[in-house]
Length: 277
Image (cartoon, rainbow, N blue to C red; front, side, top):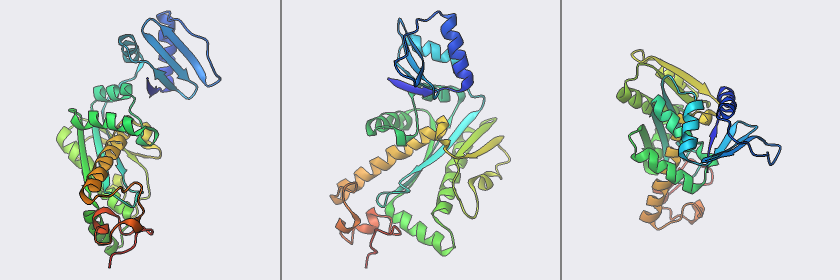
């Protein structure tokens, strides 16, 4: 089963299409459902939240293609993984989508990585990493991260300034390769201290770019895709560190890590991480 969040206009189009095609409706099974359809190879349940759960099929794909509203511009989104973990790298990922790619990822059920199972993150991460979709990733392994953090700290800057810099670089690279006539850049809003991502990108005069900083930006498919890609790569990097040093970072505490290894696997500014030496 797959799921997709529909806009009010798309829900209206869905209801009209069900009526137009005279699709058979099934009785609702709980108060959170607003529409349940099962007819030939078309099966879906629409919830009152706007979320649709559906069974993949040719008929269902045709129905979605009819009701979904296509983006008119290139859509670029970024997100990060590893910011809240004491171990592993900081990963910032960006995804640039054409209108057709945005539509396909919506139908694939791409959502924020926080709401997906590990298997689903791996499954979608594989699609994103090995497809033709435009993407860019910045990986700061622990050893590099610790040096960058200390340098920014000396300049009176914080982790959010590091994030702002990394997100900006990712977006610049994607725009530089795609060279779109027009693009919408969606950024998850956070306290970025000295200079916001929007401020950093305001110099991109050669691109027709609309920059949107919003809370809960994972509702945008490009940000959701970037969230999945960042988490997929973070998990991959942690597995590599585990194999290299014979550890299980997800289950171990910082106290269990040999002191000589800590700078290579841990973010040293975290309060629960003892400082080597």
